[in-house]
Length: 147
Image 1 (spheres, rainbow, N blue to C red):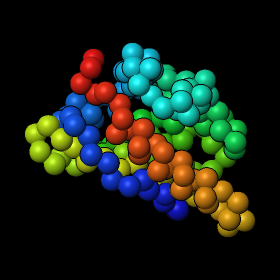
Image 2: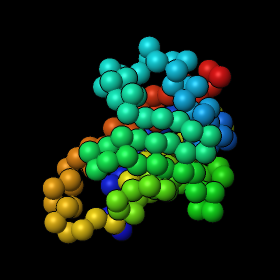
Image 3: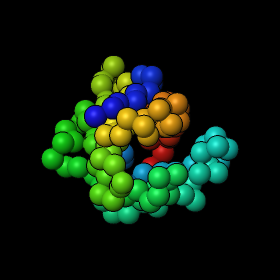
């Protein structure tokens, strides 16, 4: 499985609050809606391609629709949240790693993990690196303590 990781990001919030919000897609959507004005324009432009369900996130992607469900078996509170593709042309996971820095600060890193055929990997490698990086940055910008 190929892995594309974001740079580690510092978040001014405790690890348990972040885990609770990111492991619940509807809470995550409410958080985004409440603070839409604080998100970068690029993130706002892509929100119409994302649907937040009770235990999953559906994304309209260049490869077709993707449905990522919270993988409770592989997630590990409060350090790891795994979303696994329920509907995807390739095996796909989105993993969010959390590590406490202090009581009120957490380090996060996002990773996209895919099983891509060799010919496809060459075509999408750069886009996947950018997607992981941007997702990691977006996670660090969310106002976790506002709700």
